[in-house]
Image 1 (cartoon, rainbow, N blue to C red):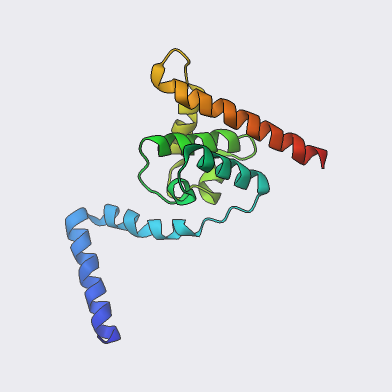
Image 2: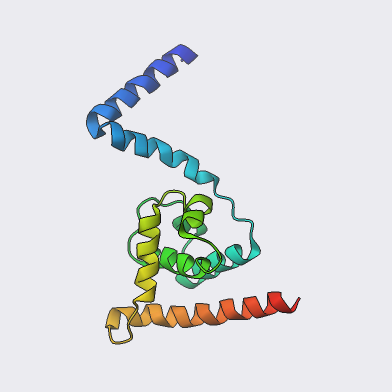
Amino acid sequence: MSGQDQNLELLEMLLSSIKLRGYKKTLSILQIGDSTNVSVTDPYELFVIQSVVDEFEITLDDILYNKFIRGINKYAVGFCVYYLYDNRTMGDLRRRIFRGRSTTLLSKYRQMILQLDEDIFEHKKYLKIKKGLDKKIKNYKLETNEQ
């Protein structure tokens, strides 16, 4: 297949997508591509994200790259935002780490963590996770401040 044939096929697929989904939805799907270039270099941010990934037994890709978040992944992102918000603004977190999500959505996930209640049965397992993460992150901060 020549380069011109590939270009024609690509344009046909693009037009088909626009007809099926509409212009705005197709554009939002195409913009997701630049969210794969997330690079977290700050040691504290790496520690927090890796701790959450380990605690929830999910992959790093689930937190950073999945566009649609449901179930435990929603809480995992919420915990990341909850702990990282101490050092960064919500807009900064969206631009640097969570590129596929809006600041409103990130704020909502953080609020879910803030509103965990011991009296609600479904929240008990997340409160247990929070206690463990609180301890890990506190120890990390103490270790890094001593050095």
